[in-house]
Image 1: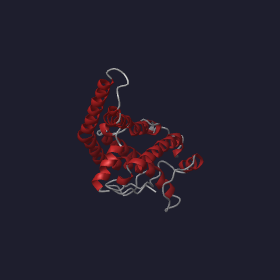
Image 2: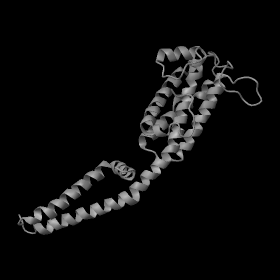
Image 3: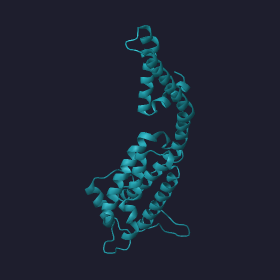
Image 4: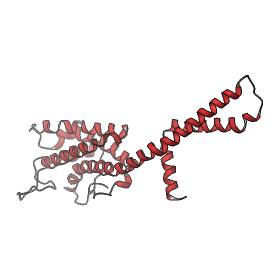
Amino acid sequence: MKRKEIKLFKYFKNVRKDLKQILFLAFSLYFSIEFIFNNYAEIFTNADKVGQLISKLSISYISAFIFYFVVVHIKSENDKENINEYLGYKVYSIITYAHLIIQPMLQKFDNKARFEYLDNEKLSNLLASINRADKEAPLRFKDENENANWMEWLAYLKESTEKSLSEIYVRYTHMDSKLIKILTRIENSLYISQFDLLLNFEYDKTFTLYDLQIRTYLKHIKDLEDYADKNFKQFKYRNGEFVGTK
């Protein structure tokens, strides 16, 4: 099968299920009436006229479907493919920023460590072992000769995430409802909304304060990663390198 034919088949496969079902019904009715029922005597008065009406309605729907498929659906699918490259890049950026909350902390104790979704106990122990004020984060500001502290690092990742979210929302009309739901949960997560509030708490210098917030945030990120791997995986490394991914 040629590449163009494969693409057309893919486009047809993505048409709404109910529209395809009606198309199949229209074809079935048309061919049944024109090639089978017209060969038999009328079973009731004006049956021929009813049959012709149904046949014409079927042809009208088939014609309308072809017009929709060629003029509307194919263009929409092309637009979707083009925009998905951008969306995929931005979505994986958000995932990477989340991975980079945890990976550098793990690398404090094992410089070869890679990001992983830790269970609650391991995550709590890790967060409790990191002093938020220690200047050990993998970020160095201009005009400074020392690394940023952990809070500055997380603030940088948070700002980068919020920037990516705002850039994604510009393409809102090209996104499906599931992606919007996941991104909205991330945007409104306790980690994002309470980040600045918790800065004022001084009684605990570790990240234990952020335990619940980070834990639930990573669950949302896992949902986003599962969605991305299903819908955007071909764009994962298209526009950049993601040092935080496994």
